[in-house]
Length: 434
Image (cartoon, rainbow, N blue to C red):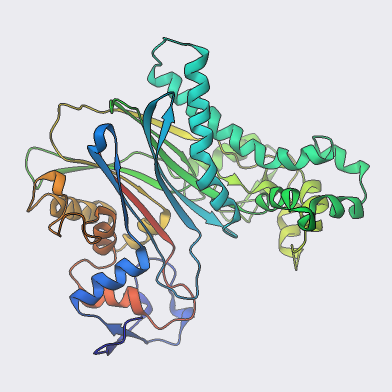
C-alpha cells in the first residue's frame, strides 16, 4: 500500500460496497488510508492491472480489461481473456470473464483452453461445409457444442483411466487408484486431470465474426453481459442486461433442477444445489455431475487432497441421480449494425461487479460511466486521459465508478481497508467497443 503523506480515517461495515463485509467481521470501525487523486489512480492501476487490446478488422475496435482484488492476502480466482481466433485465415474476436470457486485450478484451465476449443469447432464447422455461409443459428449451435464437449472432457479424461465409466472403478483397489492418479513423479499428467475435477468456474464469453456483423454471447453461471448503447443524445443511454443469472437467486433455475430430480426434495437446500453450490451451471464441479463413487474413489485418493471429507459427505449423501448442474450455455445473438456511428459498449463482468453496484444500482452506475466515456472526446478516444495511457482504460474507469466514483474517501476505503481477509468479491471486467 502507498504510505507517503499518509492520513487515516475510519470505516464501518456498511461503508464498504458489496456483501462481503458485515458486523460479524468486526471489530468496527476499521482504519483506512485516505489517498489523494493521483494516488487513487496509481493504486487502482497496480491492483487491477488494466490491459487494452485492439480487436476486429484493422484493429478498429478495442477491448479493455481488469481483474481486481484489493486484499493483499487474497489471491483472485477470477480470470479474463481477450484474443482473436484464426479460423481458416479470418479473425474472430473472443472475449470472456471467468469466476472460479474453491480454487483457481479449473478457472485457469478453462480460461486458457476454451478459446482454443471454440476455434477448433469453428474450423471444423467451416471445413465440413466448404463454401456455405453459416447462419447465426448454426454458429450458436457450434458455440454450444464446443462448450459442452469441453466440459464433458474434464471428467471423462479421468474416467478413461479406469475403463471409461464410474462402474469401472470397481475393478480397482484404492491403492491402485492412488498409484494411477498421483503420478507427480512421472510428470503429473493424470494428477492434473484429476485436480480439474475438484474445482469449478463460471464462464461468460463473447464472439464477434470477422466482418463485425454478428455478436454471440454464451453464459454459464452468474457473470453478466450488459450492452450500453447511446440514444439520440450524449445523455441518453440504453442499458440492457443480455444474460440470465444461473444461480440460487434465479427461481427458474431452481425449478429446472427440481423438475429433473423428482422425489428428491434435497436436490435444492437453502437455494443451493445439494445444499452446497450456489451456481447452477458451471465448468468442472464434477462431484455434482458424477455419482458419489467418483468423488469417494478418485478425489478422496488424490494427494494432496481433502483434509476433511465431512463437508463433502454432507452433499454427497444427497447425490442420487446426477448430474445436478450442467455446462449447457445460454446463447444470445445480436446483429451489429456497422452503419450506426453511435457509441456502443459490451460489458462482460463477474458477479463481483454487480455486488459493488448494489447500493447505487448497476443501471445508474453504467449510465453515468457511459456518459463520461464520450463526454469530452470523440468515441474512439474513449476517455479524457492521455490516449494509450494505462488510465485511458474503459474497464478501469468503470471499476472506479463502481467503487465510489468521485468520492475519494469511498474509493480509498475500498482500496486500503485494514482487514485481514477479502472485504469485496473478486471483480473482473472486460469492456469492448462495438
